[in-house]
Length: 351
Picture 1 (cartoon, rainbow, N blue to C red):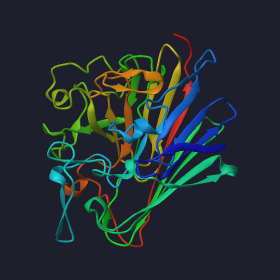
Picture 2 (spheres, rainbow, N blue to C red):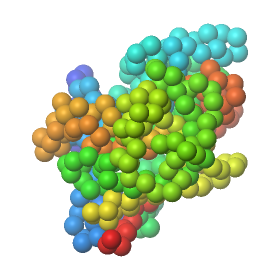
Picture 3 (cartoon, one colour):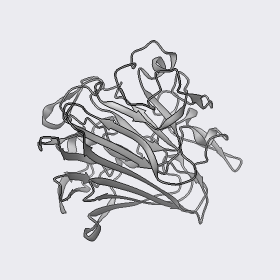
Picture 4 (cartoon, one colour):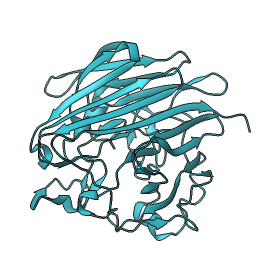
């Protein structure tokens, strides 16, 4: 593990980069600004190393507007309708930074904060910590947060989330890396084979807020229970696909209780790289990069065009504070918010 300077924010706050490597040639770099994973280098079936996440070479790119590349998202990942929720009889008002809705924690969510960081060398782990003050972005309670990235010799990236609050508050943390298993500069992700372990998903309205229904995927373009190319049905004239201009929806994972279980599996046929995701969260947001438009110049000056990366964000369901039938995202004083997601990298045989 190494740690090194990674520039400063606009107000002069230093940003550091941490690099973790395992015994099999995998290398992860993450920075204290937003807990952002800036690069993730993984060998292909021929042993060639490629960077499989979208992002920037320097802090300057991350300080400009970008679609949450690689960041820790909080206090609330995904959308809250109209930027409002009721809690214990009081209405809380949040920023509406995504059309009429609140998205990914607001104007200066966790993705735009400089975190404290510590190296845990025995576990090949970096731990990011911060306190989100009572009232930050409109949320109640002082929330103490720790997010750790551990890189194992089993080719696992283990992401652990821990939070405690002194007031009741909604919490829904996630990791927002954009993956392209062929390489961050390799074009679109439509040929990736995706499996999602989910019989149902949460349909959304025109502003991407869940309707409250848990709809079956059977017979729809949302059925990824068997592996299928991401691009096979993405442009069908299905109403839900029109709402998101493609996939930008939450799938209801097939699981019981709080056990760690399979959520998704992705294979990129050309490179042979695979990604398997397990989690104890009840949902996963699959976003196919529909709103990337070629205006962002990323690493090496590469332009990130439409659908050049995909996100698989483990989570509770969107808008849960306003949807009593959904699993609750409210934590109470004295309770721990604790979740785990494991990203395992591997290789498939040549086709």
